[in-house]
Length: 318
Image (cartoon, rainbow, N blue to C red; front, side):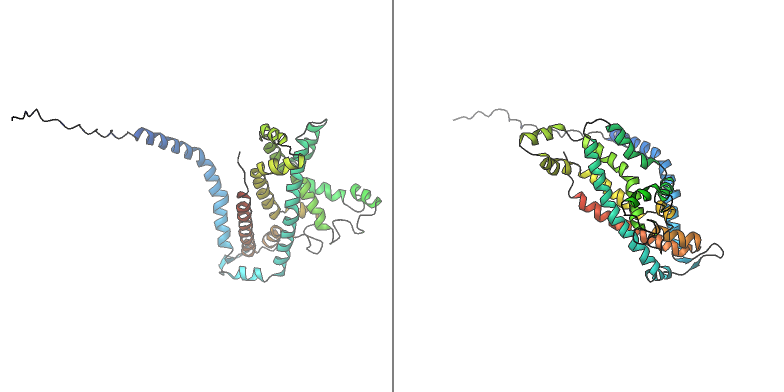
C-alpha cells in the first residue's frame, strides 16, 4: 500500500505585531502646551513669590528674632512664641477673633443664601434690591466704618436716635459700651460682605437645571422639600466656597474694628490682626508681631482645611 505524501503544509504565519505608535508629535504638542502655560503663569508666579512667599519666609525668620528697627535683629529662637502663649493680651485677642468668626461667618452665609433665594424670584424692583444689597461690598470698608460710627454715635447718630425712641440704645452708645461694641462691629461686617456671597449663591441657583425642579414637583415635593432635597444639596459647591471665604475674612477682621472702636472699649473688640498691628507698628516689636501672625496663619489654615474636608464630603454633582 503506497501512501502519497503531499507537499508539507505551511503553518499559518503568526500575525506580526503592530508597529508602535509614534508618540513624539503628541509629546511635543504636550510640551508646547506646557511651555505656553508656564509662560502665561510666569508673571503671576513672580508677583506671588515676590509679594507673598518671600515676605512669609522673612516674617518666619523675624518671628525667631528680637527686632525693632533700631538695632539689628537678634536671634532668640522660640522665645517670642513662649511669651505669646503666656500673654493675656494674646488670649484676649484670640477669644475676640474666635467669637467674631463664630458669629459673623454663619450669619453671613445664611443671610446670603436667603437673599439669593428671594432675589432669584421675579418681582418688581428685583434689580434695585440686588444692587442695594451688593453695593456695600464695592465701597471701601473704611468709609463704611466711618459712616456707621456716625450713625451709631449716641449724640448725633440717626440710627441711635431711632433706636432710642424704642428704648434699646445703650446710655454710653453702641461703640462705647463693652457689652454692645462687638455686636455693632459684627453687624457692620455682615452688612458689608453679605452682598458678595449672595451673588455667588445667585450664580449657583441659576445654574441648577429646571428639569430637576419639574421632576420634584411631579413627585409631589413641596417648597420646603424641594429646598432641602434639591436646592441645598446642589448648592454644596457654592456653600463650600462661601463658607471658606467668609471664615478667612472674619479671622482677618481689622478695618471696620480699627476705625469704629480702635479695639476698645477695654480691648473688648481687639482681634489678632489688630494685636499684630499694635505690637508691630506701634510698639515696634516686629519679632513678636511676626510670631502672632504665624500663629494666626496656622490657625486659619487648620480651620480652613477642617471646613473644606467636612463640606467636601457633602458636595453633590449633577
